[in-house]
Each structure stands twice: as C-alpha cells, then as structure tokens.
Image (cartoon, rainbow, N blue to C red; front, side):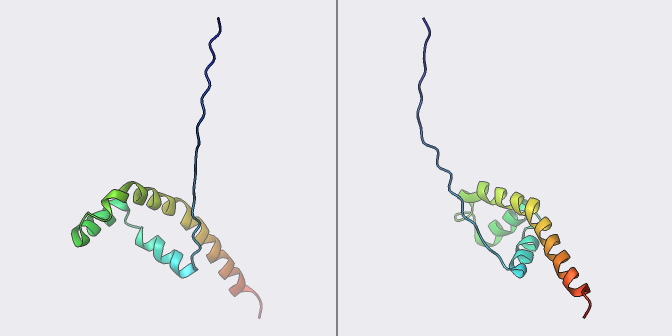
Amino acid sequence: MATSKVESGITLDIKIKLTLTVEEARALETMTGYGHKSFLDGYYKQLGKSYMQPHEKGLISLFETIKKSLPTELKKVDSIIKHINDMPK
C-alpha cells in the first residue's frame, strides 16, 4: 500500500531596500573595507558587546553583500561621471 505524506507551512521573506547617495555608498564601502572581523574588534573594544553581538550574523552577511555588490555599482557611477565629464562642451 502506498503511503502519502502531506505537509504545509508558511515561508515569509521580508526585505528592506535602502537607497543611498553616492557619497553615502562610498562611505559605506570604506567603512566596511577592513572586513567584519576588524569592525567587530573595534566596535566591541570601544562600545562593548551587548548591542551588536546578537546581530553578528546579520552584520557579517551585510559586510559580504556590500563587498560583493557595492564596488560594481560604484564603478558604474564612476563610468557615468567620466562619460559626462568627457562630453564636449
């Protein structure tokens, strides 16, 4: 006799989009440039662990996302700015 299995569940995926100015994006890229370990070492030394430690996993993921995505977007911005600046006047 065949056995059947039925499962149900709910999956919820909430995302927040953040819009930055170019200056803010450059600052964020620079701020994360040393990596999450250096950031956390400095943060914990100066400010303690109570606030950030529960969010370490999210911070690590954030730094990885920034490192992977932001430089490409800033290169596009730089290319657009260069193109505009190179236009005949």
